Amino acid sequence: MLIPEIERFLLCSTPQAWIEQALQHPEELLIDHANCEKKAAGTAVTLMFRYAEKEELQQKMSRLAREELRHFEQVTAIMKKRGIKYRQLCASEYAKRLHQHIRPQEPGRLIDTLIIGAFIEARSCERFYRILPFLDAELEKFYRSLLKTEARHFQDYLKLAEQYSKEPIVERVAFFAEQERQAIHADDKVFRFHSGVAH
Image 1 (cartoon, rainbow, N blue to C red):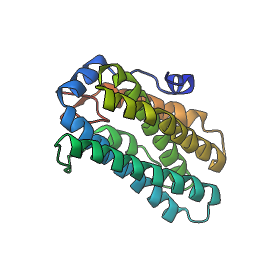
Image 2: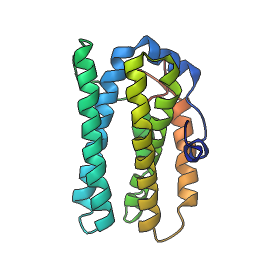
Image 3: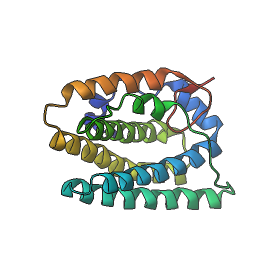
Image 4: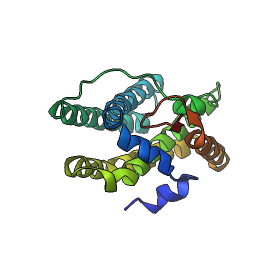
């Protein structure tokens, strides 16, 4: 079951058209999933270096990075079994559409980055959940196992944003919720794990 907190956090469900594209592009789905896990680990480590004085962030991001790299290993192991070669793929517009709104000055830069992290993890969790009924047994079991971890990552990012913000984050969360909704419904040139519908 998708946790109600994530259902409330996201303003829309993944479009059926994206699910259909995912089923038509199983290789790209797995390759880009692996890329997403690697990028998520990289983001966590970057935050650790950028905000070394923030103890709670250090601990949560260290654990998150380890878990994301473990997921990367698990995805690439499944790919190897299926004869799918790992490679770099160009990114969709999804993350760029969110990151362009990050405030340049601190602490706004950190708060916005953490809120965007929460949305990316929440959307990952929601997408794993939406495609579960259409997957083979191995992938269904694997993606189901990721739901709990991704939900915790979403909560960690959001709690850190609340902790380090000098003011309530509700307005900023609402702003990025709308940007995320638009990104999910926007046309994308390519199909990716985090993308709108490709055209």
